[in-house]
Image (cartoon, rainbow, N blue to C red; front, top):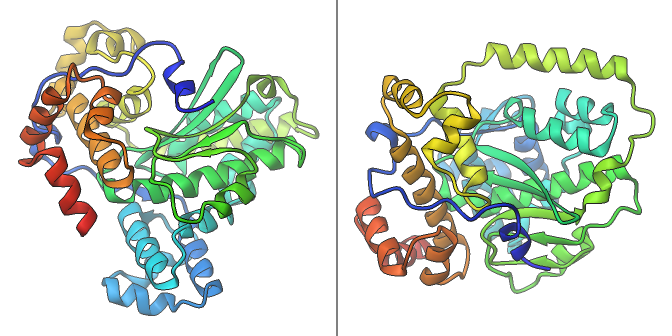
Length: 362
């Protein structure tokens, strides 16, 4: 089994919708923020490997306070620190080690909600529905098809160069969470990672205890769909209701625009099903014109958001994987590589090959 598992879920990939600017209305995307606890995990892992976190933080010009416990940390800052730390410690799987420190308890209220859900499926659906309370800039998805479940993680913030690092970190944490809920005997079928294969893949094999496929278009854990029906031993419905109420109050305090909701929707759906404005309008139970008016009031259009999502995913695959331009073009459902090259040049001012050379050199 391979990335075809993802392709086998209902519907083809999102199709290109033109060549508008990849950033809505020319405005920069909001800063993507990771959950509290990741910063201290990066710090502790660097210390364990014999590095000097304070020195690395100062070298990058980052605020040391960002890595205190209990704070949301920008994905960009985390990515830069992990990347530099990996170079200095000669540990290319540093993101994996950081993710291994994540536990059900480290997810806070969301972890408690999952622990007290009726079944594994309910816990995973809670993770999908409420992951935004833990971070902004990445989305979790759950797909079930032909007896196979796919739990995916997709960064959708602007930091394309950090996507592989954040993806492997998140998959390691989600693996720990599932092991805590399912028991030590639970096994993955395979793991998909959107990054090139490292020289030494043994750390990945040891941790995931399953085949790890590199150079994939998405980050995902693949396992038997039978798992979703498994009840969670010791789940307390009273605790679940209390925690769910607390999460919903936190979500109510956080403003969310239609533009942000569509960014999340587009990112998680783009490799699974045809994603058009008409389809989005139907899922929101509004007509196409109403959807367009709401987006126009926020200074953007569906076309702009769709192309923004395509551009971000294209950059991630060019920077982090060894997929060819032809393969990336097909993944993004362009009619031919030339059409992808033309769109990418409009978005970035460079051809995909030139952009890849420049960013990998950096």
